[in-house]
Amino acid sequence: MPTLTIDGNLIETPQDTTVLEAVRLAGIDLPTLCHLDGLPPYGACRLCLVEMTAPTQSMISSCSYPAANGMVIETRSKQVVAVRKMMLEFLLARCPTSSVIVDLAKKEGLTETRFYSEYAGRADAPGSELCILCGLCVRVCSDMIGAAAIGFNGRGENRQVASPFFLQSEACIGCGACAFVCPTSAIRIEDHDGQRFLRMWNTVVVLQPCPVCGNSFSPEPMIFLRNLAEASTDLWGICPECRRKQAASKFHSVLG
Image 1 (cartoon, helix red, strand yellow):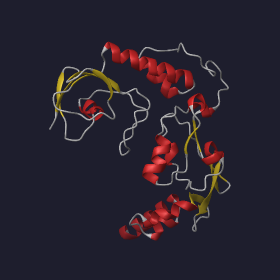
Image 2 (tube, one colour; image 1 turned 90 degrees about the vertical axis):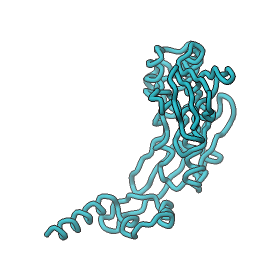
Image 3 (cartoon, one colour; image 1 turned 120 degrees about the horizontal axis):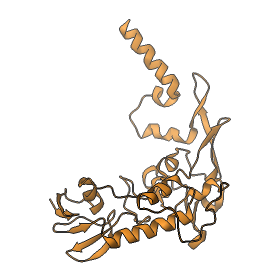
Image 4 (cartoon, one colour; image 1 turned 180 degrees about the vertical axis):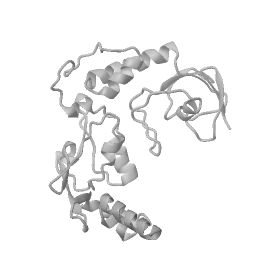
């Protein structure tokens, strides 16, 4: 098992772990916005940068760098803190209305950014300006769900996440995984009138009605999931509220 020195403390880590995992094993809170357990490392937000002083000296992205025996890591060196603050200033300029970004910046002593921000100080900033291009939604849709319904579009300052050609995404199953993993809550889902609206993707998915109560509760394309899990028809066929009522009824009948 590799043994690393992290902020002056010896830490033993399992094989095939990353520096980020080792840092967390050491009980150190290292900020990340683009990292999710179960997905391959991406290194987009750069907030998890640390300074490696041995066996060589360099600044590394801890989420993607493998932990190795004899490493010496500093998570709060002067250089690391300076770079992390710079990245937070960029994020503040891009998403000044994001409470997540604002809170992370405050932890580093930042309350403003020196870079131009179109929406700084404006109460009417649109919700779409919360996107930090971390890529989590794109990767979870492709790598975990297998739908690849969204992707990156454009370059430079015009880069954004979108459905193909900004049209209805026929590959979207309406699962909501993209909204669940979004670190800044930029992706919002609305359910009403028997439909699920994913406005950032210009996509609408029909919701399946519960055969017991008639309330719409699940996107129809998600029915394919029943083939991927060992579950009864009752579990997939009715809404959560009706399932709870059925479970309670069975429980009372057993007790009675």
